[in-house]
Image (tube, rainbow, N blue to C red; front, side, top):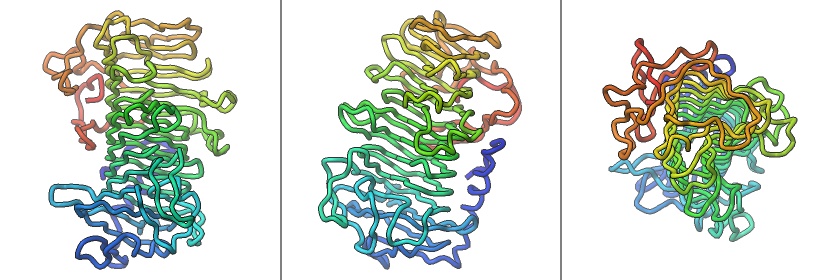
Length: 462
């Protein structure tokens, strides 16, 4: 994994990222699980006794592992605990299926019904807060009603808010190259967690039909980074958001986010008062992402920033830095780029490509409230400030490019790289001091690559 160049409170991720590459495997216990391995099933692993440096390798097999477990263990900065899938001959990820799953009898833990893999919270571990854990290279699915599993109370149904991965509490967690799908929530991270990194995952096909409260990812954390992930549409008939977050110190960088009621929903912290008090709560960075609004998606709002608890004193009331994203709307009706919850929320928007495939006046930048600081972007000609009665303010910091066509290689083929002659090539302004620089770009799918050094920066994500 590449070192990241984030400023101030984001630097803590660098230490973790480097540490994960320096495990001394000679001192670690290694559990090999799967066909012709020392352990034939996941439940044979002594999950309750894992210690720093231990590794669990789950080998691919043609049939899913119908087993679920809890991680309530703690590694160290130099010796994390690693649970890693070993792909099959064609790169297939080992499948962990929560439907009809069983649980190791020695794993006595609460909230079994809320996740296929749970992190934090167990009666059989002395670690009140697990930490320094890597979970990677697995396909985790089936955490939803009406599916059931066999746990400490016998056959039990999953709860309405279950997840493929449910993080109850953790410090320093990396989730890498996971497929999280066919659950009520793909990923859920609760408010007692700290320093979580989600990278290179495919999160899609989650939610509950007819419900707006379950999402592909639903997170509340002290410091969380999403980078290089592919967020696909939710399950058919499900009205949740794609990425919903209540965190302090959130970075959403170089992801592909397609579908959902809203693509990005950034609201108030409700589970931990320390998050509301953190300076990092007032600064959110969303950059380098491809964001797609499809015809038929629920809300016409792309990004919501502020809060939804109706306790407005705890709303974010800070700055959303939204830059170098490529936003595409395929709707035949109007969309709104930003909905801010109060007049005390601000968006600084620059370096983006903001395109609608219908009429130009179907691109509205704001919805009712808040302050938009509009730098240099490419906008579909004919855009409007708002489709609502707008009582906020738009400050134009720099002139934008406007036109009918931003010059993609292939809009229909979803190749949003810039073709020769694009008006978005080399026309971006410099970023403000202090915001994380754009060092990478997204590669379809679930990869990133370094941007060339030097030269004029392009508008958009790619």
